Amino acid sequence: MNIINTRVKHIITASLCIFSATSSANIVRVDQVLGQLNPIEQRIEQTIERAQRLPLPVPVPQISIDELKAQISEPISSLPNVLNININSQNTAFVEVELENGFRAIERQWLLMANSQQLNTLKQQNVTIVSVKNYNALNMSLVRFNAPQGVNSKSELLKVLNLDESAILDRNHIYQAQTGEPTAKVTPNKPVAPYCTQSVKIGMIDSAINTKHNAFKGANITTQSFLPKGLSSPNLHGTAIAGLITGKGAMLSPLLSSAKLYSAEVFYRQSEYAQGATLFAIVEALNWLVSNKIPVINMSLTGPNNAILEASITAAIKQNVLIVAAAGNQGRSRYTQARIKA
Image (cartoon, rainbow, N blue to C red; front, side):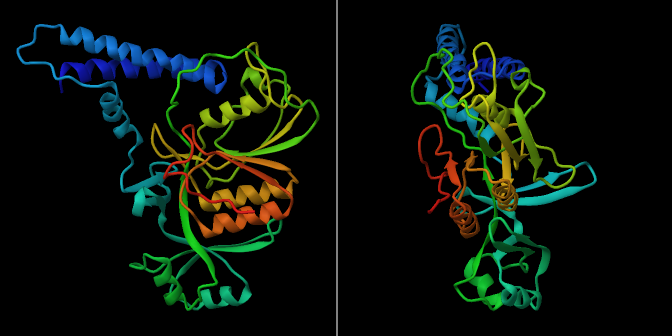
């Protein structure tokens, strides 16, 4: 490893540690956070310039900021092809695997929006049924099952299960919190007046919220976890989003100052740098929020097209629910393909 990469990684590590400590103590607006990160690029440039002036026995290779960012972010964002999501050292909640196009899903697990006839057909096949559940608020019934070994496509599975093309069937995909770098430098904004001061309900499907933070003193927040028992949800992303909606502080004005916030926790920790949410948990969260008659739901996630997700969101919209979905900090990308149809 050359001296440039070593020094730059030390700077990045130190900066991330400082940022983590700051984030745990204060909730700030997204643009303020990004403004704090801008000096990192300047430090990288200064480090490269200093390193290139050192009398080294071999020439120092010229390396650009973009190349350094790519080298540093690649190991952070990557996940193994097969990943055990463990509750503890003895128990595994589930196993996620990488699919085509870099998308992920729970190994061999599928979801079927089934009627009674389809359910009876499924029970006669060589599959392991994990759960059968009715979602009254969404007016749908969902069967979660494990497909036979070696069956890897929807067309193959329909044939094995003796179901026709009309069946609403798809994988239990893994969705991730939307990420992306800003394309322009930003500066902190002054606090703004709330957009609405009325007592309104709003829902969010995200990670957990640190409800003990000072910014949420007096806030009306109801939380519900949809993770397997014993699996906890990280709270940085959810806390930041909740802070924008209803948090209060010296430099933080809530968008909805009197809102009642319903927080559905669906994200689990995949690594120190990544978090995922199963489609099954997202559907359960949607049903819970719709059953509580939440008129607006914010979803901060990205992932593949999925027939079950589309059907669930369509069912929520039919209940006059407005769905707000993240498109990413840089707009739509190939990783933001979950379609929402009214």
